Each structure stands twice: as C-alpha cells, then as structure tokens.
Image (cartoon, rainbow, N blue to C red):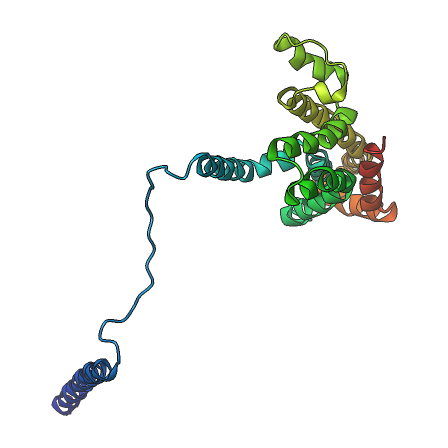
Length: 269
C-alpha cells in the first residue's frame, strides 16, 4: 500500500512539473508570435532625463532656481510655522492638560486632540489668513507685486497677531540679548525676535490655563483619597474610584465647551 501511495505521489509531481513546463513554453511561443505581428520591432518606452545646462539662460534661470529653492525651504519649515507662529501651541497644550486632569490616559486619542487643535487654529487665524490672502497672495498671483513685497506684506498681519499675545517682558528678553533698539511700532520688530518671544508667552499662558483646569479634579482626588483612608480601604487605588466622578463632573458642566470657550476668549483683543 505504501509503495502504491509513493508511486502515485511521484506521478502527480511529474504531471505538475510537466504542466508548468508546457505553460512556460506556451507563453514563450505566444510572445514570439506577438513580437512578429507587432508593427514596431522596438517598442518605445518613456524615459526621464536629468542633466545640467551650462547656465546660458541668463539671470531669469538663476532667479527661478533661487525661487524654487526658497519655496522648498518654506515648505520644509511649514510645521514649525504652524506650531510657533499661530495659536496651535496654546490650544494643543490646554487640550492635553484637560485630558491629563481627567486621568483617562489616551482618551480622547492624540489624533482627535491634534485634529481639534488644527481646526480651532484655522478658525482663530482665519482673519489673519484672510488679510494675508487679500494683501499679499492675490496681488502676487496677479503679478502686481514681487515676491519680496508679498513676503513683507504677509508678515505684517502675523506680527500684529503675535505681538498682541506676547508679553513685553518676553520681547525685551530677546531684544536686550541682541542689543537691538526698542522698535517704534510692530512692523519694525524682526521675526527672529518676535517668534521666540511669542512662543514662550504662549507656553506660559497655556500652563496657566492648564493649572486652572487641574484644580477641580485635584479636589475630587483628595476627597476620594481621604474617604478611602477613613474607611480603611488602603489597597483600593483612589484613581480608580475618582475617575468616574471626574468624568461625571466634566460632562455635567459641559467641560469641552468651557475649555474651547476659554481658548477662544483668550485670543480676543
């Protein structure tokens, strides 16, 4: 019986191998027939050529190259511009403090918090973006102004927004470090000085708001911990008991509405 089974297995293997060989020969033969019937013996394939010219295009070619390099540079630092020159820093930190004060670990997830922070940032920055589009982007696209003039006009709304949220103490810190004279108006403040001053001012404001969010939840934790200790339940984690009460309090007072409302009011001049 075993010999018959081994013989059958060998026969099946040989049939399988012969089938594969016949299929390969069939494809090879079909390819030759298609090549013979093809009107062009050498098929045309797309090609990509990368090279360097000898610079005979004049000043316009150099200007275009420099413009492309500047555009690539701006796109590479776009995340830094979004984080340090808009309201994104304050919003995402305050939302993170709200989640930490609840003690819900990763709920809501990071994707939800960052997405909410992005849309709130676009909402708060919409007047600034509208002014930049009207004063700088549209005239540039219509060819009425140059790129240098467009960048100067685009920086003015951003400077006004950042200066309104920057403490004078933080701004003087960087001005005194570089021995720069005190600017007469907002337009005279260099971005290299205004951006870091705005960033540390935003961090201070965000941490202040986060501290105010933590206070009611800290009181709940202290009440729950003292209650458990008075009942002699030392082995029961207080966080496990206080978490439902903190979520209940946050829902009853409509916490997300209050947090977002506080963020919006903090940017009202």
